[in-house]
Length: 111
Image 1 (spheres, helix red, strand yellow):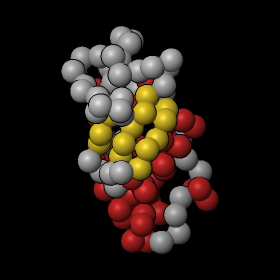
Image 2 (cartoon, one colour):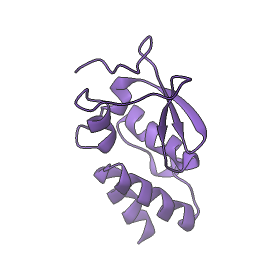
Image 3 (tube, rainbow, N blue to C red):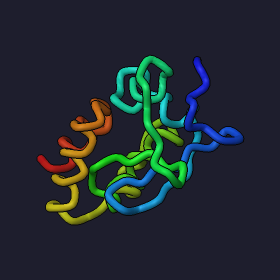
């Protein structure tokens, strides 16, 4: 795995829709089929903002579920939101980030 140029001391700061998250390259690349893995694989030139953050123009509120899914290698059903509307929004985020397993898990809850 190639070191991301925006990675400082093993940490990556993301600005997702105005919400700041700090995570690791390992977490972001855990699902090798995801868009995040592709972004942070070293194959793409990622430009950091002046403050060192990487901006992702998505819903910052839902991104915490995405990160927890990647950190834990899955997500417990009881850790997901109860609202069907929020679940639909989160499913859309999972689809956008190409986290197919998470999207399928949410889809089962919505049925």
